[in-house]
Image 1 (tube, helix red, strand yellow):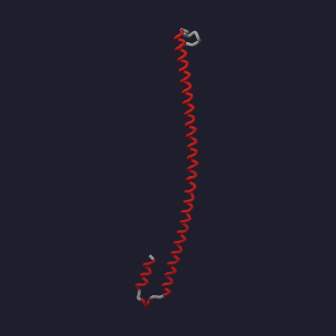
Image 2 (tube, rainbow, N blue to C red; image 1 turned 135 degrees about the horizontal axis):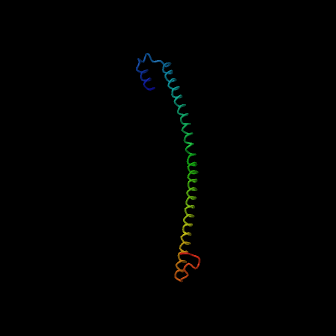
Length: 116
């Protein structure tokens, strides 16, 4: 955009050229460039703030993941306990059935107080 202004200025007859005009154009251009540079700096600061927040995010994600891992460990531990209890109940039932079978083999029947 600035180049077009300069081109238009220099399209004039060289006798109409003025250093004062050229300086004014240059100053306006410089002011505009300074304004754009400031806006860029502000936007860069905002980008840096956002980037810094992104650096914090992995720490937060790590904490969340650690909590999830702890929760999964608890869940697995509970499942293991339930399975151990079922296994124990199955062993007890197996022993009871084995005892009933032995009682029947030896003809003890329901004398031991069991009805089987």
